[in-house]
Every structure is written in structure tokens, then in C-alpha cells.
Image (cartoon, rainbow, N blue to C red):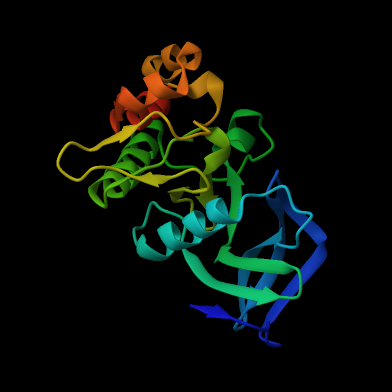
Length: 207
């Protein structure tokens, strides 16, 4: 699913910035003639992004296939950059809340059902997202909501759907569940003994 060199079928328009974050910038582009979003991530020795975190995001998204989960189409590598070719979306729930996106939307009930269905699917694949928030729910061009950004997603124990709180980071604080907030004062040794569950994502979705 990865290529060593981007072929002419991938074109990135640096003049159209769709989003940006600590890991990289997302631009408008085309891939195999289709409009896409292209996330460009710096991969040289000076980058502040954890390579293991990058790999986790790639591998998780490759495994997930659901109408309410953002699709990773391809990963392309060239020189000091990795390009994640993603489904094109027209905005985020945060854009909608702030009225930066004023286009068509599902009803409130349908929108919540779509997000819940996407999250249920992620959990059914034995992953916890850990960063459910308005910025990470995208609005597709067909006005379907899609959960995105799997940078701090991690596997959970299959039988109990739990994970250790010893791993960091734990997502955006204002959307964190009580158990995550209460663990902040714990030592690494104490966190190793604490288990959290996929329900922490459900709390964030409720927020």
C-alpha cells in the first residue's frame, strides 16, 4: 500500500491548504484523477513527530473500512516526506459549529448515529481512538460524517476492551473522560496498573 516514489498520478496543490497540525499539513490534491486530501508529513531526523506514532496511524487506517471512518487510499514516500492520500472532505464538525462550513448536513439525530456507528466499528476492530473531538470528525462531499486522525489510536485487549493508562499521549484534555483526567496525578508505575476502556471514546463523543 506504499510507494517509494510518487508517480505523476498524485498531484498536490500547495496553494490550497485544507488543514494543519503538529504532524503535518493537509492539502487539496488529486490521485488517479480523483479529488483527494493529501497529508504531507516530514520524516527526516529533525521532525518532532514520533515515527512509531506515524506507523500506528498508517497501519490502523489501512485496516479500517467503514462508511463513517475516513479512508486512507494510499501512502506515498519521497525524500523527507510521507504523503497520506485520504478521502476528500469539505469540512469538520468544528467548522460547522463555528459556521465556517454552512453546507448540507445530516440531521442531528442522523449525525450522532453516523458518528456512533463509526466509533462502534473502530471498537469492534479492537482499537480505541482516544482523541474523539469536533476537529476529528469530517464531513464528506456527500455529507456523511467520518471519524479521522488515528495518531494516538491504540489496540485494546480483545476480551476486556481495555488498555493501560501508562501510554501517552491521551488526547485532547477538554474531551477526556474522568478516568483519564484522574490519572494525570498518578506515577508511571501507578498508571501501569490502571485499566481504561473503549467507553472513554463514548464519553468524548457525548461531549
